[in-house]
Amino acid sequence: MPDLATTKARIADAVRERHPHLIAVSHDLHDHPEIAFEERHAVAVLAAELERAGFTIERNVAGLETAFVATAGSGEPTVGLLAEYDALPKLGHACGHNLIATWAIGAALALRETLPEGAGTIKVFGTPAEEGGGGKAIMAQAGVFGGLAAALMMHARDVTYIERATLALTSFTVEFAGKAAHASAYPERGINALDAVLHVFFGVNAFRQGLPPRVRIHGIITAGGEAVNVVPAHAACEFLLRAPEQGILDGVRERFLGIVRGAEAATGATATITEGRGYPHRVSNRALADTFRENLVALGQGYEVPSADVGIGSSDSAAVSHLVPMIHPYLQICDPPIGGHTPEFAAAARSPRADEQIAEGAIALAWTAAEVLLRPELREELRAGFREQLGREPQG
Image (cartoon, rainbow, N blue to C red; front, side, top):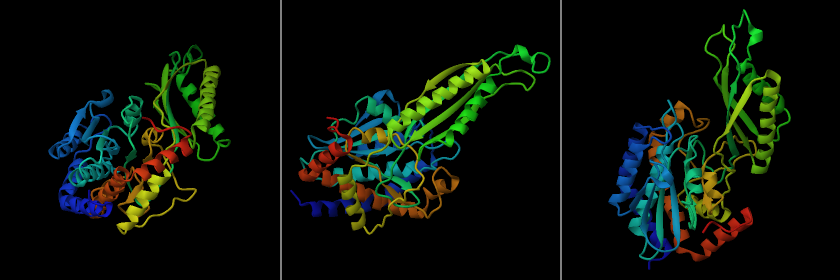
């Protein structure tokens, strides 16, 4: 069996040989943006690449049409590479998911070609709908990620981070039912559902001054009436609630529900509350992050440590991190301050600099995955770190 250094050299050669083709894959995904749960072109492209390399493809995973699991090799240990490929409405790949998917399959194809026989199993998880749909959370609930020694993915950004926190999240849709009336002649006969929605916003704004650090509440009005001279009988809003930890989020959630009930009492409208799928905060496995850091530095890539006040969001990848050892680093493809979810970042995700980083990112992921597969002592460190950070064993 070749030693680790020899295997890593072969991995780097395999990725660099495929680099022009991987750029074409990234551009193809970028040129065909698809929103959550509609990523049929992306799945077809990625699955075809993996099938040609000998991966077997399981489709419609966890009941999701655009989720898949590709598998090569056999036996234990098993390492997972996570691919995202959904785009943002009207903005396209303004979060760089074309790169996330390309890094994952670039690493997987190189591992498939170079790993010695009996090294274990490589899985690529095609995970739809990160942008609001929670594809990974759905797949996690279905037990799709069980048994992994490690799960790896990487995100594009305007700065390289080895680790970056995320916020636990839950979502609410609130609809108020009131009573229509002529807004001028007989307003007293109506119950104004829009007033109830506004009370929710006023209550949230009053709550903000007492929010713990890093807690975020933000919402939009999705319905507010049809005619200005009619008391609105129906109005609706949507909110996202975020917090650094689930326990804090639970408290914020109860306060928010109290605000909604207060709006009912103040206006006489009746609320229908629907809570959406939530995510916990993400946990980065320390030993796995250290291994990735060493591999990234070996490639000549620098990195920064996020400051305490750096902006953070939420991700369905957090659901995976609570099941198995995981990392979710960020690789720089442009200069700050070109933040994600902007037209500028969408352009950066198809730029020459991003194209160059396709090879470096795939090699760093593949090297780290290879170490997990070939170093039993590292796998024990990952399990021990998971137990220390989360107080339980990884999901078997």
